[in-house]
Image (cartoon, rainbow over all chains, first blue to last red; front, top):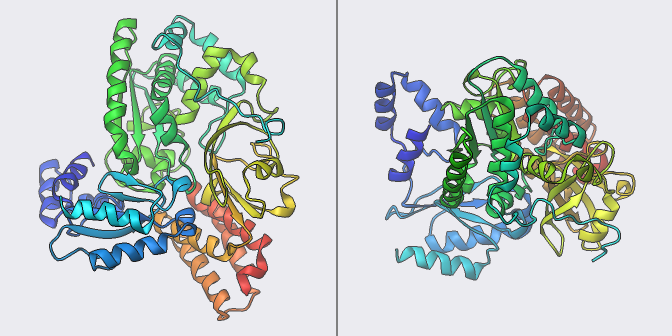
Length: 132
Length: 388
């Protein structure tokens, strides 16, 4: 698993080729490696952007306006949930509880959490990432 | 704030003693029997939610023969509405590591692991820094016990202890059959103590205060204090350390917004308590147990939406290994949608209840078994909302 985590850290996702290579090196079946990778929601097996945005969709974030946050992100990035921008910079996803329920709505961009989100805050944060 | 009705406590987040790792040093001088006696005396029960007596867990593992044993700290806090472990690890990581080190001494383990959820990866640099300090002190004290951090990758089920071991060993995080329990066959099939972050801190507090003083907090069945994660419709969301054994109406008096309709105690896998039952509901192992999650809903919230959200959560997080849970979660979700749309009669809810009851009996692990908790408590108490 640490190998898979390392690959995601570097390439943002694990390709089929990566998985067959790991299987060969560790003397496992490719199915075992695939099974492990697809079990974990943070081990992406589809191509992702440089910055993966995961918006918490669990109840308290939902109650505190997750929908408007998603809307703001979709408007800004011109993509829908589950999609990646054409320049491969951003991927927008929803995820389960991130553990920021007291400060919802919340999202993760790669490993960095952002909480207490408002439409304005989202604008500021994303603008910063666009320029990175 | 009504100080007289709710006892706030400042044990867990209390300041460190002046000298680093002083309590650990003093405890390492004591005999294992002494330490276990204090733990038993204190009545400490696991703080992850299930509430197994900590002293027994340690004793069983200590008594299991074997040279290779492990201490694991479960920091895969994934229950919706819970964020206390993040706060503990952020504010007092030293206490957690000390608790683990004491456990290592008692059970005779040389190696400890902390399994941290992927969502908390941003905390790793700070934790590693504190670990360096710990290792330095452990060396000075001549205590042969090292701690390593292992990362999760966004799977709720890995908070289940045997799934967590599978994940630590590098595979899919699917729960194992029990028995054997971790005390005889845990990480790498070796005897293992696995405790929640907060439990390890409590151990240290008991070592510092002694069991008698610790016991003064809480009730007969629920000793000590507990860190609560309060969220939802409350003017003061956040982390609070409170004495166990209070009633829910006192809790709502303090944290509600004056219009509280229901409180979900223990997260998505816990119980939903409606207003009319606040008075008679005790928060603790004798009433509604909780890993710390307290979500407050006011009368503007649709309990149908709440249940729908929870079921979506379970449907996604079910590992898919056993049929009752994999299919059950899907059918419960489909079922309430159908009833709401009028495609199924209201009586269909009874059938769904039966399904959730069978899941409770037949699912392999705590996830599938606990779906029935929130399902039946929400459907029973808010039936009209499910139908209309």
